[in-house]
Image (tube, rainbow over the protein chains, first blue to last red):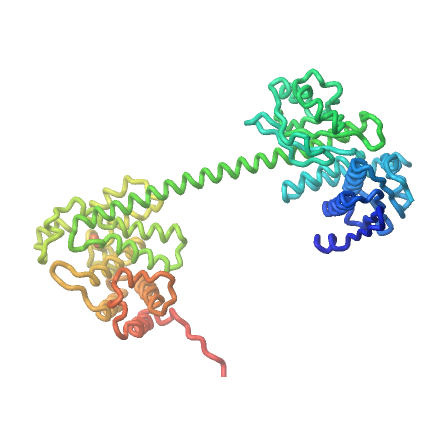
Length: 106
Length: 419
Ligand SMILES: [Fe+2]
Ligand SMILES: [Fe+2]
């Protein structure tokens, strides 16, 4: 089960920009894989992290925590974080919680 | 509208945390999930959960998120800190307001660097079990009372989980200790029994090892009867100790190289009752041990001693030991006669099944022997006790199989194919 989830996490580096797909595993402990993926991209020199939410219906507290981990790591590395294709309800949540102070929404 | 969504988000996390803690799963994973839920519910940038060690008076980090590598993994507490934490209970302490406590003076720089704003002592049933540390909120706003209430409720779940974990560890430790104590006792008992058996056998130089062998044969019979492990052990002990009464019988009577006379015989025949007297006051894990000693010379047909009991009056364990005892008498050299051939012994056993010996016991014993001859038993106990040549007597296996058929025809069913 967990292996399948990990295998479906996609990350595509384009120059200094790396894209990761949040999927729905973001909301579980297995979502930590996304965070690790991002850290690796940052170490590899990515200056921009794009988190793609096109396949993400909702984001729960675990998901928020993992995204904060991504933001924190990016800030430490001096990189920018972009959230793309965020559903409107999720966007409202991000705004309310203040995540939007730290990321650019696309 | 906005507020209600926030509430749903936050309480969703609280509910999930509750069920997380209720599920018995990997403690470390549970702590990681709990920290995610805590941080995610209010969008807190970083945080950690530490467990309190009463012995070292220190907080050891269980999980952290966003703490840099230089952040200490173990933080020590002074008496003053502990006292203040206990008074405070589960309510969040503002780090900036708590600088009077030694703890916050010592770790001031570490907290400053990672912007730790709140510290929640996890006090469960008047005991500190750990702390939660929280960094700043993602929206940059200070923590309000609403936030603190939520944090307090979630921290309680985490605290309970740690307390439960501590309790389980303590229980496991005690159970382990108990088990070890019990094992020690059992070993002591077993050692004492064996020492006794050796002492009994020492007295009788012609029947060296008799008690030990009777113990082993009794064990085999009990096993074949399908008894539980402790009961099998009890049967072995009964066998080891059955002749303990001989310790008081004069040595030259026991070792007489001739058939003893009536007076001597009367002396020797006291050994079951004396054995019973010796064994009765000892606290055995198996209640039947003294009875086995007392009645191991009784016979089913009432021609035994000391009481001439018949079949159903004789304790079962005594019947087992009697069979084992008789078998050893027949299969070892005695001062006045050589051991008898295996085939003759089997004939004797089956002839006396229902007279001297209980039929089901004879068949159990023979089954055990047959299993070994057919290579179906792990340890070759009969071979060790009787010698290889003896067990390889020609035609022994078919003889036993035949005897088994004669005395207990229903014991083994032979599978046939339907035509
Ligand atoms: Fe005896
Ligand atoms: Fe005996």
